[in-house]
Length: 169
Image 1: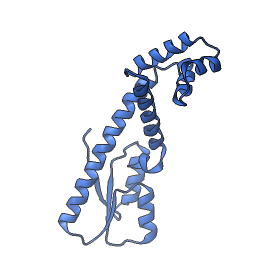
Image 2 (image 1 turned 30 degrees about the vertical axis):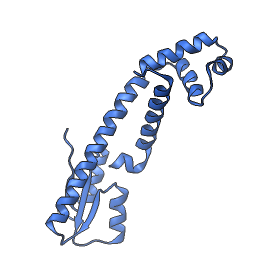
Image 3 (image 1 turned 120 degrees about the horizontal axis):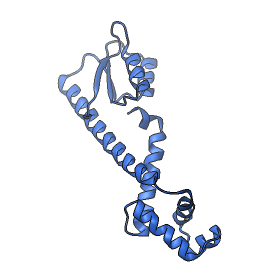
Image 4 (image 1 turned 60 degrees about the horizontal axis):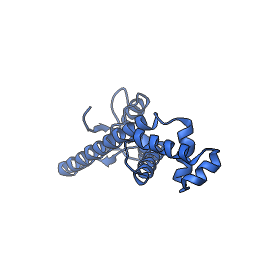
């Protein structure tokens, strides 16, 4: 439950550091990993980076350099955890939005006024106003500008979660 990182050698008995990372990812553990090795080669480094390595360092290394990298990885994990919590909070709110509200929201996000939304959805302007008010209440915002901002933020965070680097770090 705390930010952290894993420091592992690439070559270990029984399981390699790369296999360990794959096993952790398969179990849903996205903790940053710093790989170290005395026997680096390009394919190994590429594989580590594809697995979302926070760092890939060669032995020997300076203790302070390693400590700096560990602290940076922990700080990055802290940021990731905050972003995950923020996304989850927004996802919980967004899950309350109905399909009809989503139709109005999508048109609202395009900048259409209530009258145009009403025409497109075959509604009265009052019905659009009520949907907008319901959206604001469900998403805990006080204005249309805040509504657009929160939904945009949620969509960006959702898209970032889909990128390979976001899934592994």
